[in-house]
Image (cartoon, rainbow, N blue to C red):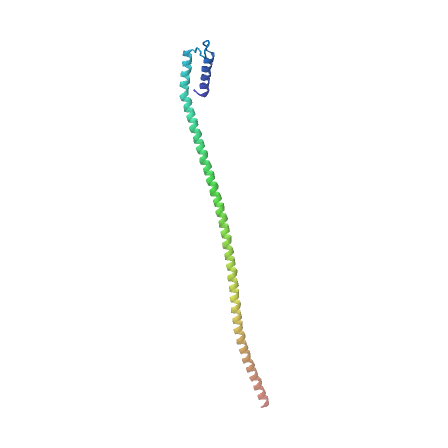
Amino acid sequence: MNRINILLLLDRLEELIESSPRVPLTDKALVNVEEAVTLLQKIRESLPEAIKQAEWLSAEQERLLQRSRNEAEKVVSQAQEYAAQLLNDHELVKAARQHAQRITEEAVAQAAAVQKGADEYAEQLLGQLESRLERLLADINRSLQQVRNGRQELRRG
């Protein structure tokens, strides 16, 4: 029997009591005991089923509530993980940019150092070459002078 039947039985019991004849000068009524007992027995028979249904509904409600809590915790956990991943990604990107900036600055500094070293080396080599060329030119000029002197001697002689 379901909840509606229990309510109907309770309504019939109430109606039986209200429609029973009253004892004059008192608040008491003459109730048909057999009919009242029959209604109470039917109510008792219906109660266990109704209680089972109520317990099942309560358990089902608790199960659904727990499932909802679990799903909510899962969603919150996933959102926290996603936020942490975004933060991590942001931190990784930030760290990568800083690392790239350091590498660029180091590369520029190394390039400047290499350029300076190359300039100094080229200047040193060109200075040495200039010195050799000056000596060679001096030797050529001496040899040329000797040739000219030798030609003049030949013309004189």
